[in-house]
Amino acid sequence: MASSSSPVIVPLQALRFAAALLVTLGHLRHGAGQLFPDFGGGPVNAHVYAAGVDVFFVISGFIIYNACHADFGRPGAAGRFLLRRLVRIAPLYWLFTALFVAATGLTSGRWPEASHLLGSLLFLPTLNAQQQPLPVYSLGWTLNFEMLFYALVTLALLLPRRIGPAALVLAVLALAGSGLVGAPQALPWRLWAQPIVLEFLFGLLIAHWRLQGGRVGARGALLLLGAGVAGVLLGSQMGEASPLWSGRSLWMGLPAALIVAACAGLRPAPDARAPGWRLAVLGGDASYALYLVHPFVIGAAERVGAQGQALGPLGFMALTLAATLGLALLAHRHLEQPLLRWLNARLLPRPAPPPTRIAFKGE
Image (cartoon, rainbow, N blue to C red; front, side):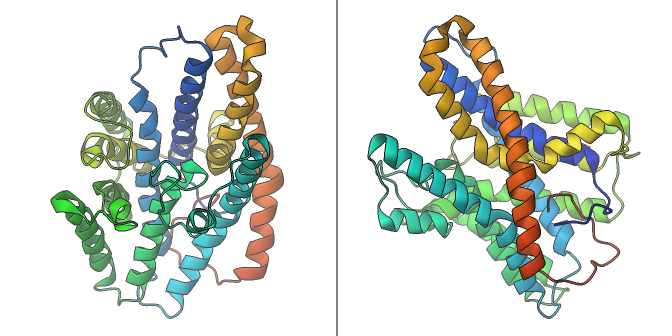
């Protein structure tokens, strides 16, 4: 976990929170539609909310390359990188998967097959009972892609600096290309060889641009942001909110990349201590907790929602969202942060990062 004294790209932290919030609102919109059949969902296409995942993937590529760009070929760097990422992602996901299994099993009597549960915990795409390539805790499909990217980065870090980054780029291109020309239908390749993996590459390229001194002023950032938002609204009309949609990296990933570039390259950088931006940074820190927590709160709200019909769909959404944000913040402060501190202290003794490294809170 990055030191509190590490520089923070504040707009990118705000974007992390916005992406998690967008996914949450999409699921909340769906829940309101289940309880209130007359609810149209508002003027925004349902697929727009899925763009939060595309933004997440681009941000991930950006963060990861900044975290390791100076480490290619360094002895032990690959193992340290993989361990850091596992500590950051896996324990909290495993915990929420266990909670989901327990809650589902005790309330419905449905328990996952052992092979499906094991594949889920190992971040390997496996088929569920409906023959869908989704983990037990279904939103973990995004983490399957994250871990795939981490594995590729780990292998690339074993290579000398002069060829490691290029090998990483080629590996991502090869995966995406194999999906476009007809990927094998067997799992896990059926899911891994999808063009959506290009979104990590977009983030990597933005990181390289920024490390080379690339910046945009406020006007340029607004233009990029506006183009990205318009692109998402247009792209949401072109396909479906599925990782198996071959056009997703084009219609949703490229607009997401424009939005990330606007936030990552903004100059002058906002002050993280300013009150408004401080809340944005806190939201970014808690974005992973929000992503994992929100299905539990929405599911519970749906179960008691029939008793709150007087609230209407918007009232139901507002109240559930407030509860979700509150619980996510509590989970971040009292579960995620203490767990990371404990694991980092025991598993990740490490030297100070090189001076050119850009660190992120919550990394």
